[in-house]
Image (cartoon, rainbow, N blue to C red; front, side):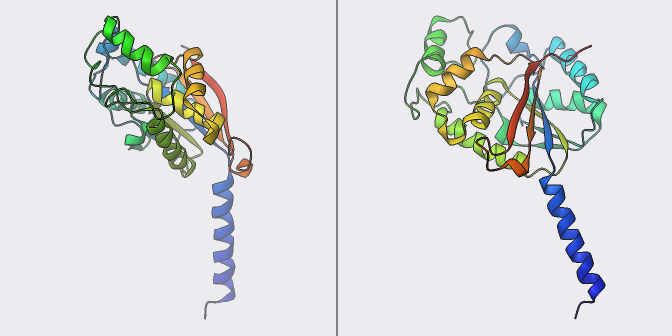
Amino acid sequence: MPSASSIELAVFLSILLAALRMRPRRFYFVRHGETILNAVDVRQGAEGKLSESGRAQAEKVGRYLRRFPIHCMISSTYERARETSEIINAYLKVPIIYSPLLVERRNPKEIIGKNRGDLEVVRIVDQIELAYHADDYRFSDEENFMDLKARARKCIDLLARQGARETVVVTHHVFLKIFLAYILYRERLHAADFTKLAFFNFSENATVTICEFHPWKFFSKTRGWKVVSFNEQPPE
């Protein structure tokens, strides 16, 4: 039979664990620094190293974020995000978790490696990103709206399970926007809603977007999530 003191300790620890799970958490989302291909307006896939400017941008973000009590980083597995994370972490010195849930939307094969100004690329991108279409529309082999929405849902679950009070999340332009859109609309989000939000909210390289998660507000429309700021340039 367990002693009364051991039972009391177990109860205390379970209450403490529950309290820790209910405390608010803050996430600093960072879009990766400029890549060599970004600089020359080429549409990229998983590959893409940071440019010198992109590395300097990541350094600036690192200097800004070190003022916060950050305990963990979660990063996309893409090369440009890994580079950005490693540069930032030279200032933070915290554990980094790499997750494929944070990678950029997969572009259709027809545009990868081609200049953004190419007329065929413009036509395809306009059809995918700017035209109103059904949620399940797919041009070819790209990740479509339904794919992105499902991944955003999984990513929110991943982040909600993080125990760290303040976490840096390194991700990409389109995925960051679908993540934020899903926070605001949840299952009510449709492709037409995302098209409007994405068009009016551009995410620049190496900017910081802050979100908070309040577990005790789980039954609110946003399930306890809140966008605090968007696309902020780190101060010098």
